[in-house]
Image 1 (cartoon, protein in one colour):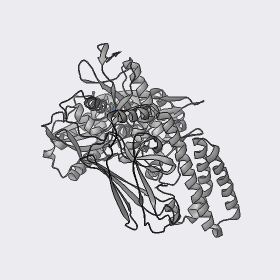
Image 2: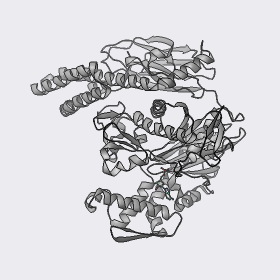
Image 3: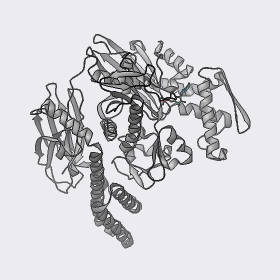
Image 4: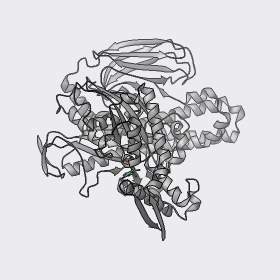
Length: 619
Ligand code: AMP
């Protein structure tokens, strides 16, 4: 046991092992731990009392990266270099986010495919995983600075509706930041734990978690019984939050809407001044009845009842979502035992009253709504550390399970620490035209390259009818049953051809070996991610070249000779880059080829080839 210093209240404390509870938010992020003396969760604060780290990253001159409050100052000054709301991009493709493209003031790459989205800042390309890792690294550094001890383990929270890809992306971000992510926890589960719900085995409750933050709104209905948290339904609006209340005040004061703001204000900083004053007014009116200020020599004021009439339509929207969530869960209002308030915007009295009235219940609002998720993550971390023996911990998979994809990469289907029984499925496709079989290799471990993990099994799915590359849809599903046996199934969905095997994942691995494999994955995160990103970039480039080649061959008659020649010259450059370029150079080469071929590709896009550009491929 190491003695560590901690600058919260009581000074120097003892702690066996630090497992940080991290709320990685869209607008703000923060860390909490269990106080070793009081055994209560506490949020880590800097000397100035600040706990919230704005989830903003700024890329300055000469590779200088800043995160948090410092980065936030560049949102107006250097919007193209300042990345916010990364969480909205986690595990998403451009196709997924294109309807909201104007929301992002920085460049989100339009590659017109289903591959994971990338962001450009200067001449570098970043994945949301890398961007989130910068935030997590900052949180880790802050925590280490405050606690004066290394922090290598964490529990990270995600919205209940996050899918497998989004959860995996969050886990990868933690790994890249040098954290061993012991578990990904649902935010409403964490909020319930912070309020002490679900801490007793004999407890059975149905809970509604109402989470209204800066930019997003989530309502989740959970069933807690026997220490198990089951999400019955989720609803919400990913573009509704405190910012909308600020905008309503701005519009009230100036008549300016989002569309007319650019002409209404003389500069971006004038608009920003108004925004900040509007937010100040809103916060002030949560505890007072009247607000007055001066902006550019003019007086502006707002009273509470006017604010409430501006806010009412937005609050009504959240109630509609609550109704939908209840109906999806198949529950009546009187079946909800507790309502928990999460997110800074639930400080607005009208929100609390309206939600309380709707659920016909006094809401749980005694904890700081900005901190409640992180506090719950710390409680979960403590349970995982084995410090809360009364709590029922479900059986979990000790190491991740996945298959080998192109370039020898490990594609995790069931992450480590998933509860058992657990299942997951994903679609893959073929790489060559007419390919009639694919080899499926199953691995266990945490490293990004399968060669560093342990091979559990290998089998062939044969008899796939001849189809163009990228056309077959091979669904691979993993199921770890209650006995810890992994059943792998592969099915080609167009033809119905299928195959399945049973594997005993743990077989032959001692506890020490499992520990060593985990240790290796923590000590090599940077090189693993570097190899993974260059391999992924090369794979993407190879697919792009292959697709472009087939496209120009098939459509030669409809293309201008100059178009073909120009495309070929960029293809040659990309071939060169695959051999000698860095990840960013390969990415830039793909982007260039994409840009020049896009106009005529759009003109001629043949459906079958379009499909061939999608999906991951198995060798
Ligand atoms: P979160 O994303 O949970 O950090 O929520 C931040 C949002 O809460 C921002 O829109 C803030 O303006 C809002 N907020 C913080 N404090 C208050 C308050 N006292 N009254 C109303 N809204 C608040």
